[in-house]
Length: 199
Image (cartoon, rainbow, N blue to C red; front, top):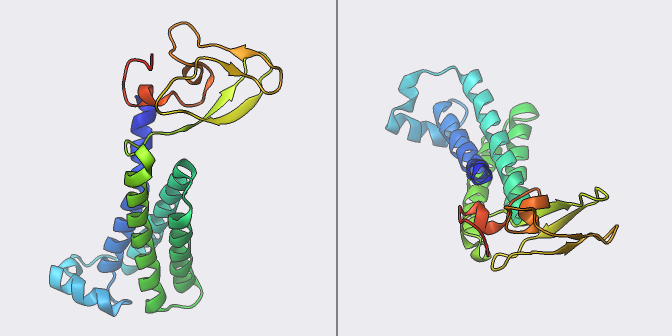
């Protein structure tokens, strides 16, 4: 249950980072004329926030977004959103620290937002993995300590697993439904979804 909660929280990092960066850009309209119109119409400029602090927080949110995209890329094995988000953050940092360009800032923020939306669509489509399940688990052999990353089936349990190093046949421990629940780094998909067991 705890794994599922952590997975959901990490899954939101890219969205939180992108939206936060966009809001901070709206709160610092002096450098970005397009955002000045929007921020003035909405009334964000009336807050009178410190521009340096706002731009620093904008960059922090951009980094949070890329961290979320990296976690999603490792989980979903789709690297397109991470590459686009990374290019967006590079454009932001280059613009703020090397040569300021409002166009680069717009590109960077747009890239982050598109990458987050793309990542959301991939995670929802995800080939039956709409629940945010983690399908990769590292099984550690209790006899020799060998570790191997395996993909867990979503429609069946794995009751026996043969270690590729020592040849030991692993069976579920008493009370566990499969070898992933006993020796894996991540429990099997039914347990991640809160079901009692796969059997």
